[in-house]
Amino acid sequence: PAWVGNPALNAQLVAEIDREGKAMGAPLMLFEIPTTGSRTRYVGVMDRLLPAPLLETIPHASPLARFEQMASPEVQLYLERGHRHWTALGNRVAADVAADAILGQKLLPAPPQ
Image: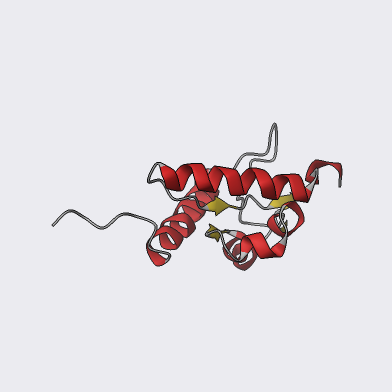
């Protein structure tokens, strides 16, 4: 799709952001925002935006698996009008996934002793 842009350029930009962040003591974690067309179908985008070798070196997380587990006509994770932002439930799921990834990948600095 046209919105993917240039994965090679995306990779260079992300690598530079990662270098700058590390130099400032702020590690980078990419967070995927899956796309959707319905309450029962979610599609990942990270592998289309960036080459796999970069994703192996930069911490990342995605709520895609959780969204797919919850997919149901009765469960609304995205607002269905306007810009299709996440609902409160979608945000809660994404926040849980992000927190688990940050803690699991040890991206927070150790507390002072």
